[in-house]
Amino acid sequence: MRDRGFEPDFSPAAMEQVATLEKQSPKPNAQSPTPNILDLRQLLWCSIDNDDSRDLDQLSVAETTPDGKTKMLVAIADVDSLVARDTPVDQHAAHNTTSVYTGAQIFPMLPERLSTDLTSLNEDEDRNAIIIEYVVDEDGTPGASDVYEAVVRNRAKLAYPSVGAWLEGQGPMPPKIADVNGLEANLRQQDLAAQALKKQRHQMGALTLKTIEARPVFEEDTLRDLAEQQVNRATELIEDLMVASNGVVARFLADHGLSSLRRVVRIPQKWDRIVDLAAQHGSRLPHDPDAVALEEWLLRQRAEDPQRFPDLSLSVIKLLGRGEYVVERPGEIAAGHFGLAVQDYTHSTAPNRRFPDLVAQRIVKAALNPNPPHPPHPPHPPYTDSELDAIAQRCTEREDAANKVERLVRKAAAALLLQHRIGERFDAIVTGASEKGTWVRISRPPVEGRLERGYEGLDVGDRVRVKLVHTEPERGFIDFARS
Image 1 (cartoon, helix red, strand yellow):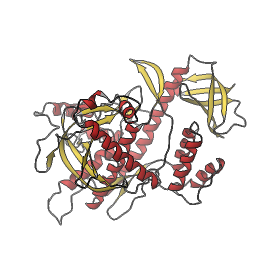
Image 2: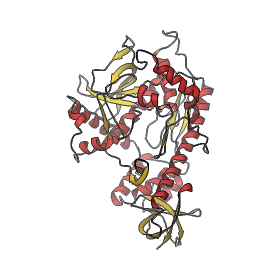
Image 3: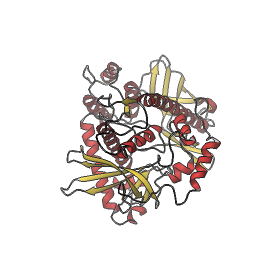
Image 4: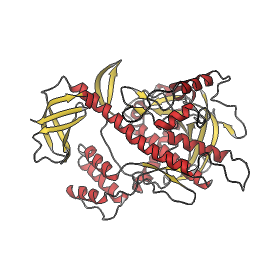
């Protein structure tokens, strides 16, 4: 963390700020409803996240409109109400800009007393929230929308694996769903809405991509295995609801004449190399970037060769280029998100974990509570455009650094797990072949390493038999030789 410029520990001033909050009575995280803060505690709110997640940023619930459509409500934790700008906790968040999830240890952006308690939408607790509301039309496009404040209550803390298996008909209903009257039907309605949103985005060119990412599995402090992270209907449900929610917030801020941070993936400059990659697989893509054509090709490749599709996906992701944060000023149009096939997109749904989302929340609240409160005066923005420019640059750079920290720890965990298996042979697939080296991935455990000998003539997608010859956990090195 320190090598990459992060501050892994909170300052004494930040911890004193949290201690002061804890002394407040009544609880500082659930205001009484007012004309401007609705009371929505009676709704069937639930959270779906990883099994071990404790920093719950969002809840969701579905309602049926009078004309039979589905209205989605997404509640986002009101972090700003407890973390004021330029306070010691906020300064730490602005420095790191993100929580860093290394598998072995989590380095939260906010102190755990906040992110896993006071600002987390915990089960059976009243919490302040920003509500993002939108109607899902028959064709899956988000319709009429609104953003406002409310008090909410999480009825059930659910987890991706069990909810996903249930929605897919591969497992029983989680007991917590059965315990809340009406939640089963509500979750199925949410799932249908999310699937409609997903279908519409992919028709517009949102890209179907799958990569293999191993997650360390510990028994207390001992590393026991690496498990492949799975995508299922529950992870897709939350992803599709959040993509739509972030679009609603982006348009809300633009409608109020406020500058905002946008999350963009630009039209790929390396499109010609994506065209070449398709040609290597016997397909043709248009000369000019075309997300719909790319998505159609990806779907064909997934159907024809599902085992190699993760490696193809990784190659496409690298050629698309990284995401970044930019500032969209009133009257301007940002680059949009090529991979998601959306034009209006901000990050606003995870303020416990990402600083851009906390910034977005403050701008939203400025729009909801203008000073002076009546037109024609526009809301007073909490950040100047130059401040937003600096934040965007900082968040983009820190995200890249966080990815490198997380990737190194994953590699170190893999090397540690394999260090007693030197000399063993594995079936592998070539995942990279260039002047910089040749890389292969074995399936059990799902680990990638460098092929130090016998790489001549190999190309991406080739299947080979390899022998493990060396590991160096401190540097994340795993070396193979062709067997």
